[in-house]
Amino acid sequence: MSDVQLKGADRTVLVHLDSFNLTEREEPEEFKELAFSAGAEIVSFVSIGRTQPTARYLIGSGKAQELRELVAEQQADLVIFNLSLTPSQERNLERTLDCRVVDRVGLILDIFAQRAQTYEGKLQVELAQLEHISTRLVRSRTDLSRQQGGIGLRGPGETQLETDRRLLRVRMRQIKARLEKVRNQRELARRSRKRAEIPAVSLVGYTNAGKSTLFNAMTSATVYAADKLFATLDPTVRKIQVPDIGPITLVDTVGFIRHLPHKLVEAFRATLEESASADLLLHLVDAQAVERDEQIKQVNQVLKEIGAEQVPVLEVYNKVDLLESVKPHIQRNEQGKPHRVWLSAQTGQGIELLLQAVSELLAEDLFVAQVQLPHDLARLRARFFALSAVQQESHTEQGESCLSVRIPLIDLKRALSDEGVDYEEFVQRYVQQ
Image 1: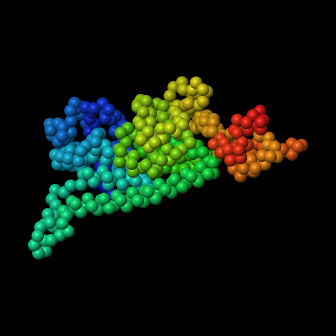
Image 2: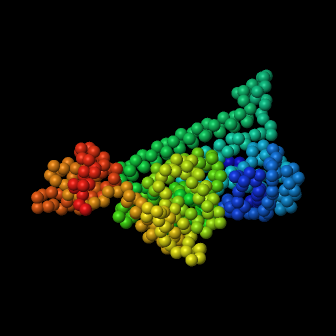
Image 3: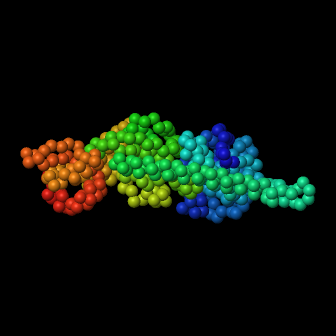
């Protein structure tokens, strides 16, 4: 699908650069984990300090020659850089090193290509890959004869390179059209869940924070979970029961990572919109990660990019079984609302605390009360039944209806407005204290 796709067990040299720009600096351990997740056989790890990049190789020409000797000595098939390379830098390095060169974006794209299982996921990855290689599409020679005159030499008026680019554009348009259909189908599914009054809770977090393990523990599902970056790519939706709330949909999503390639954010927008439309986000955090604060910052940045920064968030600190003197518990803010939950998805400790916190946060938007309605509000009573809001009904000696009502607050206010009843008056006169 792409010229950057890696083969399993490629003999690989990793090149980590202490970037001249601190905001672009990547972590070496995370880099190794990415290469491992892609299936690379790491034969050497090189760290290079650079104060200024060079236009030709990114690294200096002397370092490029040293790297060439290392590649030959290790009989490496592939060199991966832990920063983004320009198309010209990638080509220059391949000529000098005499092997394939992949940058960080190409590496992440390859992992996504390996993990995609669904039709939608494969389309999204292919689109991101095509957008990536379209800037790197060159030929050492082009079929210029097709532009010459003379018998037998008249062609369509474009070089082979131009033909390849045109075919890429056609394929990209086809994929975008298909993904637009997927987006519309997802929107219809979301509207259906809203009409059914089923709250949506979405799991988000840095890659390898344990989202799929937690998802499996909460739903008894069998989503693939492994100690690898981007072990899960395709979103999974399951319905679970939450105390005092009833059924909710829980969504497991793709993990985020620092400097997530913009091409992937765009390509996976249809999938990521599941998080943007959720009623509550469970932001899973690896509690024992050294870069924990930076990872939280990166996830929040991606949430902002997809328009999900306004969705209520409950932070879930996972892997407390790996911390000393930390037990599963709920942390509350100044208003007494759940703010963080500490648990272990692997052992299952603290799962019940998470469900309790989710119940409390979702219940804020629910109206749950005993209501006594007179005869003149019979239409409102019928409206409650139509909305499946009545859990139990009895009658007084005067024939008034006593209802146990559980209904989203927004639906209650809409029903009262339609019947010409003021909300505050309704609470004072008809709700039993």
